[in-house]
Image (cartoon, rainbow, N blue to C red; front, side):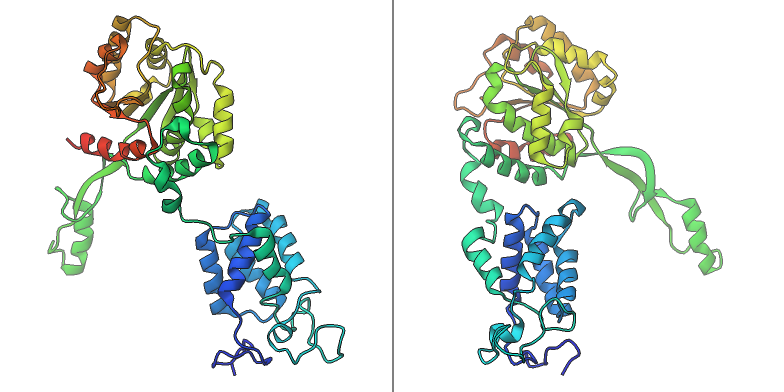
Length: 400
């Protein structure tokens, strides 16, 4: 018999069979999610593996096993302790009482096992309170995987999506833009097959071979992600697409440290608001900062303001996104002059148009026709499926 209270044959020493650790993890994580604790599938899997490795035989050991694997935020600790105390309090049953019908429940016999509050007592693996909470209050305790939830909404136009679907697709979009085009920096680092010989590292290695440089150490340039700057049109004509483009701006700000701006009749910087850890809070703060949303549009004026501001240096060598349908109140010749200045400073200019994916689309507006000679890529961006293709298309164009 092992010192964990469980025999090697998989039978509990108290007389019951081995507890169902997976069922315990599903029920406990479901109750925690219902109380607002963020518990993902990875945390639940870690909890099951920890139960199998530690095999806690006391309430205290189970508490620390669950706390270390399931709680990732210190602010959620009071909620976890509340749920754990409600499920594994003095009224819960022990392993022997749950699995062995010959053992009477507490209060019916003086020979009942010790309660779960004592560290030396039996462990309440599966309790009626835990099972009922999983079945009645929580409902489906295992969350759906993202592909099944978003596959049907990828090609849905933005104006037909509700806020929950847009938030779910935005979270998937954040993981899709982790890989981004890189640029060559001036720094060099040790790299096999590099174009240069590292003299200092080669001499240090030669000390092992009698100062004969038997093996050369080579270096190569360090690759850094390209800077990204995105400007989103939030005028009235872009009202249906503005919320979805904010999700793209947040994904770029988190994954590539991009600078994000919104414009209508004036320019507003949204980078500090979009980098909040909560997507819903970030979008709410960004919406509050834009005071001129759903009004007119002055693309040339806003681009000129960005070029003249102290943030204009971020455009140098960057991939610049302009998300707009092309309707502008400024003269086309002024937009052409501003786009020419922007093109000389940026590495790549990408125009995202929500109507570019419509069959038979042609840039007939005078504003868009004036800007296109200075645009490297004109990409459709009317659905989340089209937004997911943007990083790959930009990456191919950056390496040409």
